[in-house]
Length: 335
Image (cartoon, rainbow, N blue to C red; front, side, top):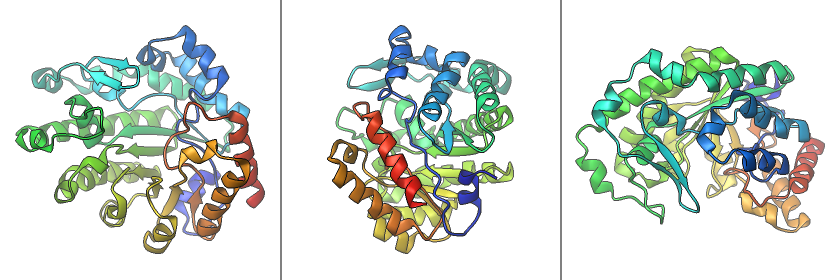
């Protein structure tokens, strides 16, 4: 059993596995070389050989305990019929949502569309040390819904009145859940051994709607993972102290903390779960002594419980790989 799965499934002191969200990305010069020749991001995600190569780049450079497949949460709506474009400094934009087109999809067509992703997982699993995990991931229904309906504006806010007016939201969420479960299953069959669920825009949901739009949809996916005997980590970013309600209702194996969560509060109240991350990625732009102080703080707080060392969000593009290397070394020495 590798260290990541051990931390997620055993309720003992952490063996401190370490990996990072967006660890295969723009901060690596070897990734930038590939990206320069492949400007279409979605096409790159569907290039099985390159996707696998990118996934393994940080594993070759650093002694990390897990690889996370190079892909994107938006490949699901893409496979269900929505075109995606990426606008500089504005992020992804999806074509107008067509309910009839969305409902006309079927399992066979969906799986065929995403076959290159599953091939990339197979290729990666063959090349990856058996002691290291291969993480698959999906976006939670709410977060995908935000993108599919174009709800988010430039200030990371939404007009929630538009959500309340949408009479088809239950139908859309149920269909999304069906295809997300299929995507999870296909990734497991291809060789993934851990799943992470990203609910990146959970923090945009009013408290009175968290049960309907966040807790229940995430619970369905977590329950599906448990039935398939695969550990699952949830990342309901931005919900602050509602992390406690999320944990009690969703019950994932692991709970990834965003950088707005006080680690002392998390350690005190979030029990019987493996915690992950929490450190602000911007700390890596500070001087080494400040970085080390922050690393040590999290290790001391969470060192006596199951804990996965990670950040409270993905590695940022301007991060120095040497800084990442030093951080990994410090965590490994703490072990």
